[in-house]
Image 1 (cartoon, rainbow, N blue to C red):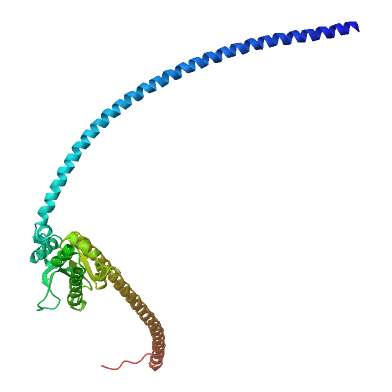
Image 2: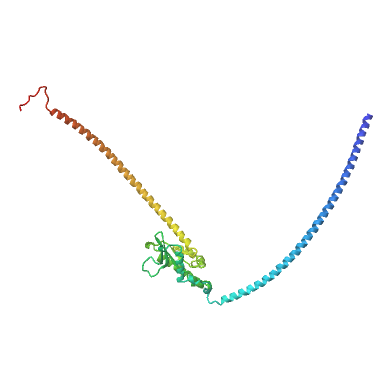
Length: 345
């Protein structure tokens, strides 16, 4: 029992000594870790200070460069302001010069797009597209009529009338005053041209197509016209109004695309008509074939009947020949066994 107690005390003492040794080692490691942390913190602080110092130096250099650039920009802006001031003075002089022009048309109007020269322009465009034999200038569906359109193009064996109207004077008057009266006058003039073309020159019974072109000789004017309302902003635009009258508004740039579209459409229509005609012809041929087939079948039946009749007649003829031969045989003199005496000579 005593030995057991001594052994237990020795074990407890050993455990206590081991704990003391472990705590001592732990304290040493803790001190080492504190030293390492202190060293790392110092190193990090040094690096941070160095980075901050470098950043401050770079920022100072950047600010100096920015100041230099800003100074250059300020100088250039001062120069630009001077240039703009000079430009403003020049613009003022230009406006003053423009105000001295008596009419707006003297600045914007191109002479070769007005009056008879507009017809020349249209003729030149058409001659660059089509051969001369499919063009007519000064065309009217009714021979001898006093009025006529500037040109007509033969497409799919029908004439397409093309009239040239601009009413530039009324348009410029409206753009100059922007008044309702001038606008109404311009719109009425354009509508009058559309109605004239629709009523006078679209004559399918006289060999024309059921639509026509109104040629506007200036692109800007064409764009203005196509955006105008017929009478008021609430009504249909002129382009739609013209289409309702079967008149298509074209310009120098849109003339060829519209003509090309008409040619393709007419070719497709002709092809469809020919296909329909071919279908009707084929249907007629099918009907005729059925009639011929019925006739052949009827003739075949008749030939069969005739053959049967011929065979019957041939058999009757053979029977008659046999009967005739028997009759001839019966009618011939009977020969005896005696020798006939010879008559004296």
